Image (cartoon, rainbow, N blue to C red; front, side, top):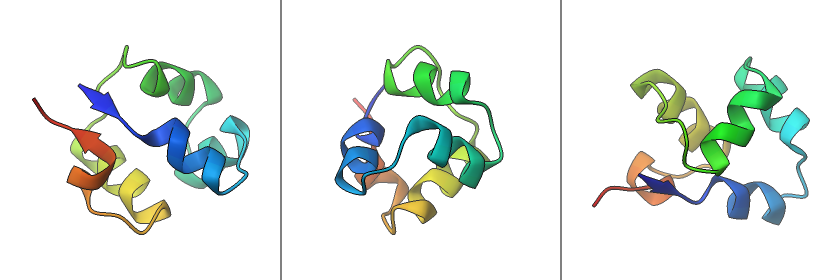
Length: 63
């Protein structure tokens, strides 16, 4: 599954550490998400979308 996390994070001038702290997760999780190597739980996907004021389907591309 592809996502726009890196793009959205960079638009807000956030580091991976900043985003990880907001989501109460690790920087390693953010790295894995951005590389598409990890699919988040529905709760984590919801939190990510909420941080960026987007709907889940605006952050994650389901094919």
